[in-house]
Image (cartoon, rainbow over all chains, first blue to last red; front, side):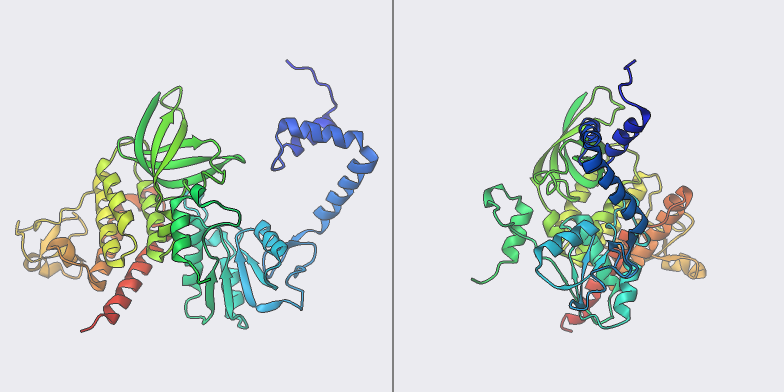
Length: 201
Length: 248
């Protein structure tokens, strides 16, 4: 049996860090050791920040985004065009689109995609909230920005069906060649989609 | 243990941060699961989409282990399937149907049928008809086959317009007339062949849903999949708009 080299508090810290995406048991051990060594500069402030985030973080009742205020910073921003809503799978997708700064619009976070294998049905996603939001009026376009997977596109078609008759223009992201992508390395499906969605130069 | 086979991806589930458990319908090894290491990589994700045809190599120390898949793409249809509602719902609905079959139980004809349907999912009339036949084939393989060739009462092979909800056998117009209100409608394209129209396809979906619910879903305490509902609505809607647009 391996001897214990640290107390239960540090062991618990390692165990919890190992649950963070990107960290395994070995890297969690390294991170914990680094935090313990920098107790005052890093461990204390990190613990404070985590405590504050835990106390204040909440899900936006309007769009499903994560923030410390409700409605979230995005929904309460008056400079945004609220007549256009971008529908995303997850908060990470919202953050990615915001990094791109391509559009200054409102968002709606679904919280996943329809997945029969994982038992995720329409009632598990924030689709009802989206329909209610659109039905209230004032929305002219809905951009469905879900992943280009079969599950993502099933969700997109399901949303389109649910919003049928509400008079909203529904669009989706284009599928095709990524910037820096080499045609030789792309799969046939992406190439076909890119050729079908070709544009005039 | 090792084997290689042709297969069609029907589902993928995340496993850890980099791997996935793929569910593949294979020609000779039935519906089979396996771990795909690096399945969440940028190169593997396009391959691991439902509907894609792959060359599968499965390897495990013991037969009862989950085992590992090595997958080579053969036909990547997923991008095309994502274009239309019928195809995207259809591939999910067929995956849900195949999940009713026992794992690792070979059904080569269902594999062949699946491949043919996936090639024709863009066409709503073909897709709807093929999907109904696929549901009947799944019912048959589960031991609840429908006999739609001859009348259960008289043995006649003509004028079959009903299906008995009790036996799942066809009934002729004459023999079924006294019980018409209790009978299910037998769509013409299933009895005599020919193309399916909106009403006959709707009747066919109703008939297969009835038998699937009674024999399979109800005993297992589950309902028809949401993807099937989506497919049925999309196929009927597309067929109706096509019939409306067609010149008289």
